[in-house]
Length: 404
Image 1 (cartoon, helix red, strand yellow):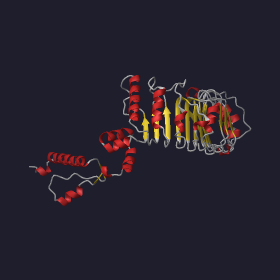
Image 2 (cartoon, rainbow, N blue to C red; image 1 turned 30 degrees about the vertical axis):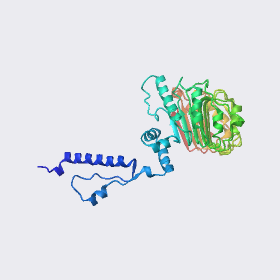
Image 3 (tube, rainbow, N blue to C red; image 1 turned 90 degrees about the horizontal axis):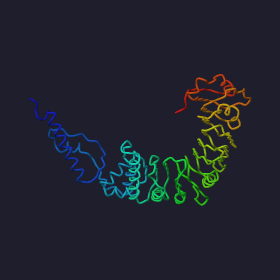
Image 4 (cartoon, helix red, strand yellow; image 1 turned 180 degrees about the vertical axis):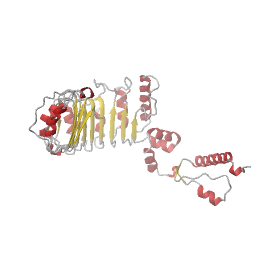
């Protein structure tokens, strides 16, 4: 007959009792942080010294200094940080100045398959409003409003309240992704940025109107700027550029009021430039001296670069626009003197392309993507003229379909 000490059921019951006792001790002394993983003592009796070796070593969080506790809390995801604030007064104080506010359906713990689109949008807006209403507005480093699915719920007044609450001096990253509307009915309040001009390093705006003026302030630490579906004129964009000196990455996407995109020469640190699907754009002039990566998507457009020696990687995406192959072969030589990698995305091409006398003297890698519906009619022999213009070419890649 099996002894009680070897009975699996008895062991499981003893383990359960031991765990409940440990949890009771932990709850009694307050919230604690585990420093080591322990083994559950077996059912057999041990002396006190053996049991002591297996006991979990802990430090009471209540004894932590306030600044360290706040730092620990700031590293926790938004939902978990809110839960901790619900059960701890000290975490509640930390929650009122929680630094990383990223709002979307996932971080807010919502199911995007429940209810109607309006009901889902209303839940997102209500939770954001509740969190920011209880936030002190102090200490915010990151604010991301990813609410592009909240049509007919977010008003300009509500957006203004959110921004005024969270955007203060000291904020580092601000991203506002509003419901997509080409009419840009949301007018982004530039006054909000004035108080954060000296600290902000990353700014991303989507689906809004943005009309900066010279009095907005100097964004001396701004490193990254992304404008998508933003109603802004080339003059207003130039005004904003005049307030920045440290920009490293710039993306202008679907900003359909711009006809001339001029990148000023004082942007000495700008190295990555992306220009996508600006419908009225006719000319891109790049005076910034250190642009190394340039990505363009749209119809063949006049592009000039004052100092092309730094340009190493270039993508010309003519998806849904004809003539990009001919444009690349005949127009890009003057701005690609040191180009190492060229990516072409082609749609419809008239391949009666004569051999070019100009050369891509430094080009090492050529990638060509052709739209699937046009691939069967692709004139592969026309690529010979392009390959002949690349005497140092090392790799050539041809694919059906567009890059992922």
